[in-house]
Length: 109
Image (cartoon, rainbow, N blue to C red; front, side):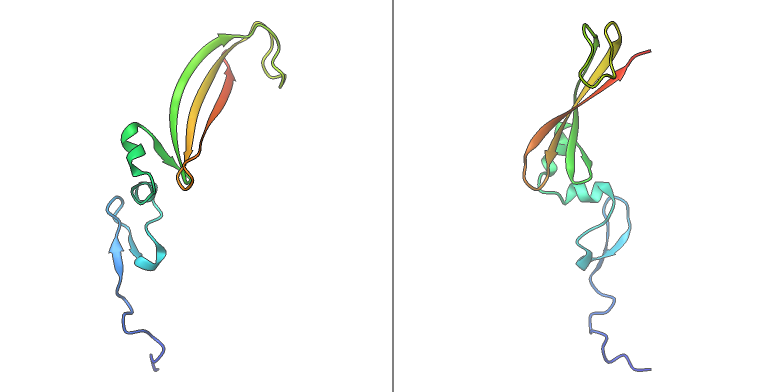
């Protein structure tokens, strides 16, 4: 069996992830773990500000507040008199740097 088509550097250019220890080839661009991706992102300083890496975006809890509904919400899920919790998250896109807020409402029982 001949290995004429195998390049001379076969088996070279492998490295280990500094976070999870997994071995990967340099042509893969990095490890698949979240910590490795956060370290190799365009905005790694956001991790020091309390943001967490999630699917290519930085996410941070902004606030959580409790409210009593005074009138029915438009979506129809929360009715007058019910108590609900509103949680707000800020997302920052790693590539473009744009940010947006995501609100989540849950009825308290």
